[in-house]
Length: 357
Image (cartoon, rainbow, N blue to C red; front, side, top):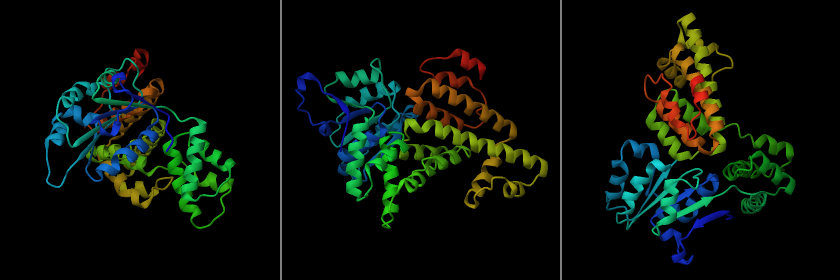
């Protein structure tokens, strides 16, 4: 596997430390695909099914979750791996408390996006000899070219260098997207079909993401538990935030159109059946449940908030995943109809934009 990482190792360790033997790790910066590879290779095989996933928001809402997971012992569990996603400086004090405990059979991985040098959490990990800090930077063209060559060889995908470069571009130079696209190509090429540029273009349709659609569908029925489960399972990429927002906006606008139609006809089934473009049969029940929750006024307010969210994320792209997750989780709270909390999402406060919302 090919990495472009920086491991913070204290001088008194002489670079001889085995990071997998340390108990608490901070994995950060913008290459989430590489972080996933790193966790898979060095930790998941070791811990197998004894893996617990949380989002920072869950722990901040209830600190007992993490401490109970650490302290609870099971006859069937020898080791535990705890993964906390979308970590920020807000978790620093809790991590300090955990670091003071004996973690003989437990490893903890904190996954974050970009943490600047002024970050208190990053500073804690860089200074403490018991903590490991690993930064994963963007892949270069060279590392992605090397990666796709190896993956094509391993998967027995026989394609030209030109097509490899096309797949890299179609994957937006993103490691995780690249691997996902190659999985689709591998399944297709197993039928001994010759791959050409036209087929690659059809296969690498990155706009279709079933996990994102499922996430948004659950946002619109305010299923908080399922939302957290999807977020924790997927570890969405920074590059996907705008795509998620636009799918969210599109589905909210569809609901609004349906809600107005129901006001006219007073018939929810008729509105869903006659909607253009047609609603896929398996989505009809969930759309019906969404319509029971949202009024036209509330949907109009939601659409304004989603549109404003896209502007916020474009101005704070380094923190886009955290902003998006905060937004989604706050929207699951019933009667969430004011904008005051949006200001708290800024790392760099933009009062002019806030006053326009």
